[in-house]
Length: 292
Image (cartoon, rainbow, N blue to C red; front, side, top):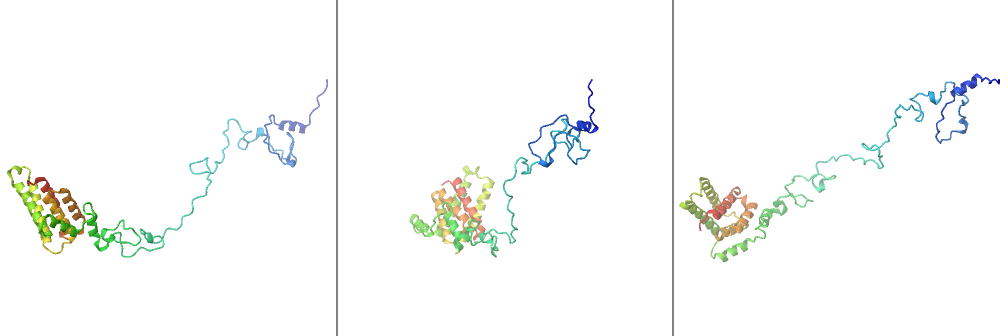
């Protein structure tokens, strides 16, 4: 019976260290000097070298890891905030310059190298602005308020001499101031007559009586103003238009004249403009309660 030759102790150790399973290797060519056949120990290697089957699970490669072990964690790719799969391809925003050191610049010339103009406000004329936020007096100079009264609906293109000529044509020998005072007085008289009539007393409540009394008080203040010399021609022309509208029952003409008076300087320079409320209320009462 042939005898099996006994392996040496070194051959037995090599056979035990040789792995039973040889996984596919990556297609990376190792350096020629470090290549060694499978199952052999490279020269100079320590006897503590372990095979893949005995490698620590924490240091094993993915192919040698235990099937019950979670895949190794990998560092996520650097990307945009909130978008892990996207990477920034453009450069970051340009660095902002230092904030302006000057004051608040609301004007074209005031930012960033110019200082604010002195002694000016938003309600004054400012060089470089188109006047979008300026009052009429700053837009048109000293005649700004007069111009504003002439461009409101019903007041556009008002020419006082033309209005006075129209008055003389309709009512010969009538003087503008006297005509206005007479028509205001007659209109209030007709309203009082309608309020005193027995047939209309039920319509005139005590509140209406107080409105009539207040209208008369404001009208007297306007008549005192007309008796003076401080009324401008534009103001007088609009009052003539208002009076002719009352006399001829042309309510639209009267309303347009009252609107032109309400936005012009003539309402503020005489008794604080309180009389404008009186003539507007006079027109409303005249339109509603006049009997003739």
